[in-house]
Length: 416
Length: 99
Image (cartoon, rainbow over the protein chains, first blue to last red):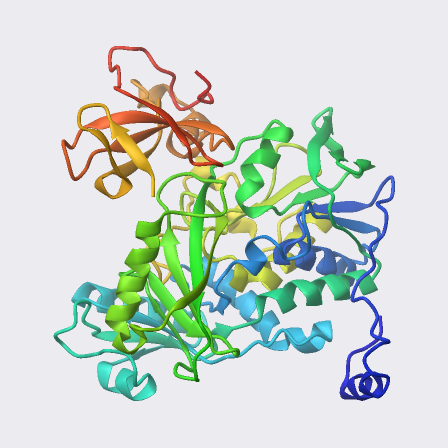
């Protein structure tokens, strides 16, 4: 891997940018690997990277049915925060936050992590009580959080309507200053490039069609590019987790839903932070290109189509326009949907399974992007040691039978 | 937007309805007899198929009755609606819905 630096920029500029190398190889898949990661999204690539970097496992393949970062990694609203209510979730997302803070240096790839702050609005007295509770819980876990009132909000976000006669009156907000956004594509590309440099084979256009299980042990996968053997298989496929589980004869407590987002035409800088409102199901930030990036809530029905229904879009935009009247005449440029894998407690499943050597990383639902590095970190540990890292031990499949759920529904600063 | 046919009121816009998840799951008659795993199965485990799905909808802003819909979860095409036959014995939450 050629290191990216100011010097390399200059050198390549002088040669008219004709000598840049591809960021990762496109190898033919080998017959067998020490470990296979199914799914070349951010979480899968991060898993492969940390398998190689932290655990010395370099004979690893990432199998991606489409192209790198073409699924949910490229379809989210890029928000990063760690202000979760329950300790188990907060520590997992905070691990991720700490990795984000050094990620560009670590990967030698600018993921454009911008800690511009994340505001979660409260619209009722109960919202504000919940916010105070969550802020206190966050601070007890060593996570930065504060409660801000309307006066401070009006000062920080001049275009936000905090008047008392608005349809969704804003009574205050929680603020995590370390939260912000990162460039989603760069996260996938950066992890792919760094994993590739450590010897990981990234195999695109390679769909897994079956998982081979013999005597209760995973022994390999069948793919559209032939069979590949491995006794450690990590499945990180978000919305299609249930489909892959079925191949191994397993079931998951996961339901797949469409989640929609959209961007506006680019406009001048107007919003330098992230504003989320769980109560009205809308969240918004402005990209470096000037587009407003807006996320909606999930469509209620099960769906594997990467699109949703118009009423959900209308609902989210109504809320955004009510909160930001100044955006009422901004036109939307693009709209898309991703398939999110929602677990009953709105928390992920990072777990061993009844099949030996088969691991699942799924259930991130609507909020997986922020967890990309931390998810890879703990899942790589789980795959390498056949044992959960202490941070993901609470997120096992068993919790649904024992009842030890980590209920972040409605508690995690946004409604799910 | 989905066009959903209520068996009583006819085809109407999705916004009149609320979604009730997978159809055909009945509460076990004797929960005390179930193991934790079986109870978890009833509470949390769903077929979540990629393809044909039998699901519950409620005509929330209309006649307020529950009914079933057959819908493809990839194309979202609805192939039919049906009234729920409460007398018909149905599986617990433990088996996949394939009928």
